Every structure is written in C-alpha cells, then in structure tokens.
Length: 558
Figure 1: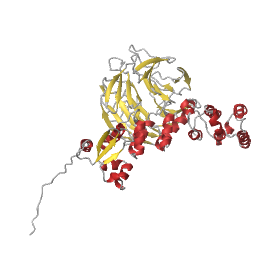
Figure 2: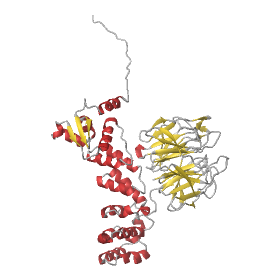
Figure 3: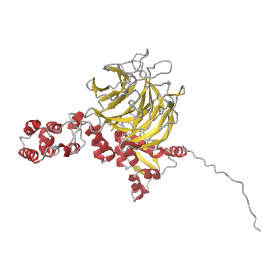
Figure 4: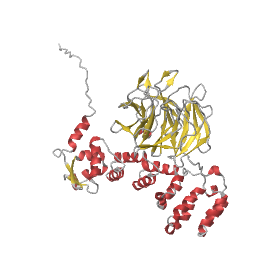
C-alpha cells in the first residue's frame, strides 16, 4: 500500500529589492580586481567589464566579438574621447544614471554617437529638444543634421520654421550653408505672413556673403511660391534683385505667367501655424466647453462640449492634440477624476485618478510626449493643506509622490523652466506670501529663490522664453494688482515690467511664441483677453471671450 505524504502548505514569499542591481553594479564599477578590461582615456585608466559595455554599445560589441585585438586583450584605447565624458557614459551603463548638463550635452552626444550607445544618443537628443530656444535652435538643428538624428532634427526644424521671422536676421541663421537653408525654405510649414518674406530672407542670406552666394539665387528662387508673392513686391524688389541674372528673370516671368494665383493649392502661410490657445470652462452653460483661439484671425471658435461641469480644476496640454483636465470641484465635491481628451477624435478616457484630492493647487509640466511629467503642488482638502508633491507620468499613466513645499500654500502660481519648477506667492490661510520656491526633480529638493517684489495670491504665472512672469493677483491688503514681475533664473532676481491696463486676479497666463504671453479669465469674469510682448514691453487687447467665466483652464497647444 502506497504511503501518502502530506506537506504543510507553504505560501510563496518573493523578495524584490529594486536597488539590488544598482548596488551590485555600483560596487563593481570601480573595482579593478573583478574587471576584465582597462579603458585608457586621456591621463587615466578606468576599470570596466566587456559584457557591460557590449550590452549597451554596438561599437563595443563588435570590438569584443569580431576578432580584433581587444577581443583577447584587457586594454581598450579611448583617448579620442575626454575622460569626463567616458566616465559619464560608463556611469550610465552601470547604474542607469545619466548626468547631462548644458556644458556637457554636446560632447556626450558626440561620444555616444561614435560608440553607438543609442540610449544615450536619444537621451541627449531629448535634452536638447526640451531646451530649444531662439538662441540655440539653429545650432541644435545643425548638430542633428551632422549626426543624422531625425529625433532631434525634426523638432529643431519645426521650431525654426515656427519662429522663422524672428530668426532669419540673426548671424547664426545667416551663417547656414546652402543645403541647410534650402531644407528650411522647402518646408510647407514655414511660418510667414506673406510669401514676400521668403524672398526677403533669401536676399538677406545672399547679401551676407554676396561674392560666394550669388550663384545660388536660382536654386533658392525655386523654393519661393511665386504666385503668392504680392504684385508690387514682385515687380519692384524681386525682379529688380534678379536683374543681374537673365536666367532668374526668365524663370520668374515663366512661372508667374503660367501659374494661377490660387492660394488654396499652394502654401498656406499663417504667421504661427502650430501654436494655439485652448481654453476649457462652462462660459455660463450647463456643461463645460472647449474653445480655441486662432492668432492668425484673432478669433475664438468652439471645439467640443464636455458632459460635466467643474470649477477650480487643473489642465495641461500633451502637445499631441491631447488635453488633461483634472481635480477641482464637481457638484460641490472635491474631485479626483483625470480626463484625457483627444482633440482630434473628440474621444475622452479616464486615466488614473489624482491620489490626493485637492483644490487651490498649481500645476506645471516638464518634458514632452511619453516622457511628459505633470506636477501638482500644494492645495487644500477638507481644510487641510496638501503637503506632498504629486507627479503623474504620461507614458505609464502612473502617479508618484514627492517632497513637500517648505511653506504650505494655496492659490499660488507655478511654472517650469529649465527642467525645474518654480512656485510663486500664494496664501497660507492667514497671510499672503512673497516667497518663491524652486523644485529640482533630479535631487528632489525644494530650495528658496529670490522673493517677488510684491506679495501675491491668486497670481497668474507662466514661462515666456527664458523668464518667468508673475501677473496680477491679490496683494497683502486685498488690493487687486495690475503689476507684473519678471524672474531671471540666471541672476535669481525679479524686476517689474509694464503693468496691465487694470488690476486682475485669478487670471490664467499662457506663454506663446517664446516672445508673448496671453492673459485671460479671472475672478471678475471679464471677457477681456490681453497679449503682452516681451520684445516691446507693451500690452494689447485681443478678441474677447464670449460668455466668459472665472473658472477656466488655458493652455498652449502645438
């Protein structure tokens, strides 16, 4: 008779230490005793492991498997790359931590491209994309072209096209070679008001070095949509400039005489084809509506209606035609719902809800695409201040918590600049704040910055170019402020710029075109919309919002 053995039930207990691998690799990274490779760089020798390098780099995989001398030897000569750059890439290979700064990004990209470390190349490209500005976009575009990086070239070319009118007189733009200029001018997305400006750009570029560049006139002329050029400009400036080239004059006359001047089949040339202002609010209706502002026609249009109504909510743009609307009050209850809205298909889906319900918070984003992160800071729930920072990651639809502000606050403003968050002003429940705190997502620390000149709550805050602006709000004595301040992170200082025509509180502020900001909404339910130019320090009125309401969300959408 067979004996039946019964064992007590054992419950599985899996131990998962997410830091285990990092601890091990950090330990062996600088350990000569267990390394099987010594890397020679300028003035130094670094220990390494062939299997680690080969797993991250096709260059090293080939070196160690294709019969080269390094396959059997314990030395690799990398003296063509500086030691600090090699150390940075090695640290990433072993720990997953890649430290990139504005001073080191280009050298890391160059080395990663050479060693075919694709993850590092992509990370450097993303670093550059997030920092595109007037001062660097041409250089970044040239770098992308040099290394054939479409993930960097497309965004930088788009930025150049979008801000074409602000760039084509700059020396760096005028130093482009013929192929680089042709690539820009051949794009149908180039942002000009009239086609005349394309030819003006061409003549400006040629005149910068006329002796060598005059030969390219015909090639560049073929990139101009001649039927769209104004008749006066065509007969005067354009043909006059081409007089020295019979070939160019013949081409112009042939094209203009043979082609109809039907604009609809040629290049659509809005001044700013990418950036729009999108707002969400009930505007006096039962449900919320989404509206869009077109800077070309200076007009508002209705996009879609939502099936709910909120106030005090947060809103961000995903810059791919998507909006996220969340939090605030719904039916007089604090809401945690996170609605993701596809503006193209009108589809709405709910993402993971806000972990800690709150109102009176501030929201800002860092990054783009799947790497975009939304930060929700401060606020209140059931008379208790929300202390933790809440971070939502777009790519994984997951929430994380971060460190608390140094000073509890609601009704503050917040903006992102240079991959850091800046919280401005606010209210503690007893007094209005003047303090400014900066959050670094890398070190996960809050630090104090230079305080604003005037205490403000219900303040509108936005990034425009390389500065942060604090607009209006309520002062310490409850007075409605018209003053506007500008923060320079390089000097850690605030300065006043031209005030708004009148005081406003609770406004939404959106930075656009790197040179302007739009101010709208507010507690007084004003339909007024203002535009401020950082170049002229002047305000002007735009088309008002029909049926304006205090509680609106406003974002820039590309």
